[in-house]
Image 1: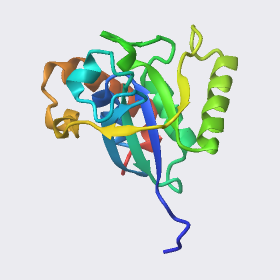
Image 2: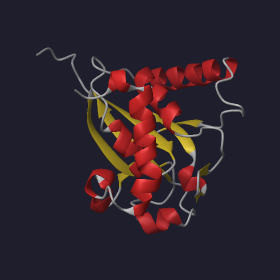
Image 3: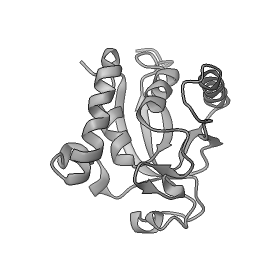
Image 4: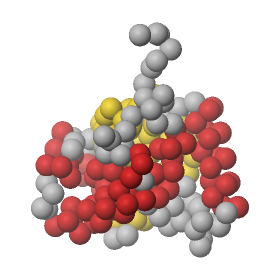
Length: 182
């Protein structure tokens, strides 16, 4: 195998990381999704600290993917299709800065792609309100506690999973079936 075949990482915030993780795990070309925290000042925050909304961190997923199988653009298309990028610091009933919409880029290329996609979405008037998704450099990422990993798959009957995550997965599978893992 050639040395230019490397996986890349995308770090995205769009509300509860359980919701994002459950969707991105189903994508062809994604090898791993890690729930965690990014964008804040407190080193190694706990879930409880982040939930208070005082750490500056957002709940994020860090997606490891093969760019030869799925592009960063494709990941962002899914991202903008599974959360509301027009509500500052909120996704549904989840309210606070930890639930903000953000793209944490790790390269100038990711930044340019994210800025271009938001500009295109705004020009096409895909959303009724302006997009408030932050595009900021990734300065830190802290994996969440182990019990957050693979949360939906391990807890599908938990009320939040049934009421919030399951409908997102169903919508995603209907609108992005061509991107599903085979």
